[in-house]
Length: 187
Image (cartoon, rainbow, N blue to C red; front, side, top):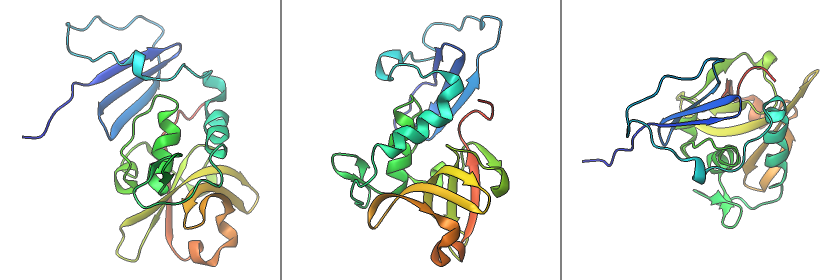
């Protein structure tokens, strides 16, 4: 029988993190009224495990700045840390973990989270997923910026963690792309 974990609820300043499991977390702006008290043991308090809170108004920019710290870290299949190297989804999971969000290190699982965003409306910190001709997710990137026709991402590829304007790459452009927002829509 698989090991189960109780749902986790954490309130940090104006943000509420709610995690049902390793690959299912949501981030919400806290309600202005105090939440209803839950019976003892319903939620697991993980405040000691998470890094200090980030100012919500800069969260997206802070996520991109965090991702940029790892530029040049080598690619390694199934890599999940700067010490060992990153694969694409290990990289995105590691970056968001620095902000208290626990994601699965699987691109397919990450593609099920958050909210779909049209490509012409992506914002820094959104995730960009790529699908093969069978419709399977095979890669994830973190949006760095979108200006004019440029769509710059930070991702871990064979050359390691790098910045790239994917619209200038015929290889990336031949694949189906979809974006998802895992961070709050407002600044």
